[in-house]
Length: 340
Image (cartoon, rainbow, N blue to C red):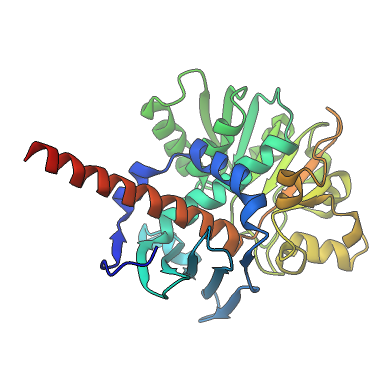
C-alpha cells in the first residue's frame, strides 16, 4: 500500500453514491468476524464540551498486512442543532496507512456515521427480528431515522408498513411523505403520527426502532407484542434511555459491543436495579455474525438490540468507502487514457 500520492478528501455527495444500506450490511456481515481478530480498538473517549454537547474520539488500528489501516473518528454531538436545521451528530474520519503512517483519506463522517449506525441495526435485525416481520415502527424522525428505515427494509424485505412517530407530528408526516415520494419502496406504505399514539403504534410493531435523545422511557415493555424486535440506537449516556425496565426484562438482550454494558442508560440502570444481570446478555454483534451465539430462538420471543457504536464498524465503513472511491478513480483514469 506504500505510495507517495496525496491524501484524498471524499465529500458527502460522493459517499452517498458509493454506499447503499444493503451493500454495507453485507460488508459488515462478511468482514466483521475477520477484522475483529486483528483490529485494536481502545474504548472511545468522550468529553462534555457544554451541558448538552460532547466530543467523542474513536481510534482503531490493524496489526495485519491484509488490512493495512489506522483510522480515527472525531465526532461532535450537539442535540440542539435541530433548531438550526443541522444534524445533531457531525464529524470527520481520517484514514492512515498502517505500513507508512501516511494520511490516505479524510471524509465527512456525518453521513458515514448515519449509514454505519443504521446498518449495524439492519445487520442485527437479520439475526434477531422475525423473518416474516411486516410492520416497522420508527420512534424519532431525525437525520438517522430515514437511514434506519432503509436499513431495516433492506434487512427484512418482508416489511410492508412503516409507521413513524415523533412528538411533533408534522415532522413524522414530512418524513413519511419524503419516503413515499422517493419511489424506492413501492410495496411499502408510510405514515406519520405523534403525541398520544406512541403506545398504540409500538404494540403494532414487529420491529420497533428508536433513535432519540430521550432521557425518559418512550417504549413501554408491556406494549411490545410477542415476537417483537426492539432496536435501541439513541442513548449513549447513563442519563439517556429509550425504553423502560419491562422491555429489558421481557426481551433477550443483545448489544453491538461490550461498551454498551457500561454506557447505555437502559442497561446500566437495569443492572443497578437488578432487572437483568450482565451474564444474561445474549451476546454481541460479533458473536452473532461469527456463529458463536444464536439469535432469535422462537417466533414468540421478544428481542432487544442496543448499540452505542464502535471503532471496528467505523473502520470497516471507511475502508469500504475509500477502496470503492480509489477503484472508481483508477477506472476513470484508465477510461480517459483509452479515449486519448
